[in-house]
Length: 127
Image (cartoon, rainbow, N blue to C red):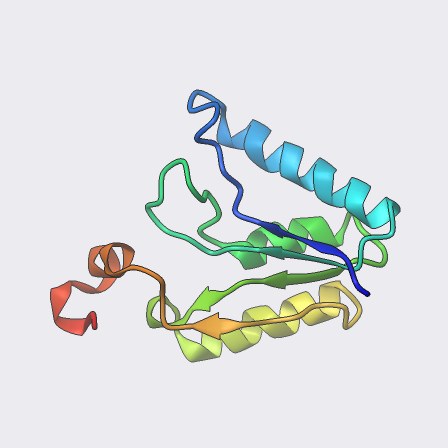
């Protein structure tokens, strides 16, 4: 059996918490999980979900995490494809693959809710 973490980076329990502190504490948890022998860590990409999920760029966060971990498999869950250029996603996944010495995973999706997508794309392109 493999054991790992799926992180939404929530801060609704402490709304006044700074983003610097939020990201720092999640990197520390991830570093501890790696040292404890956890198998994987995945972080959710969400936009405009204030309090629920605060990671609009999982690749950036995982790039930082890759420099603090040794064995744990890292990955975004998911890249919300309507918000990304496909070439940009491929480049980011390739960069993460190299930063983690081929220990990165990747997933893609069309999106969870229409509201974040309408902010980016307008109502015309949302299902």
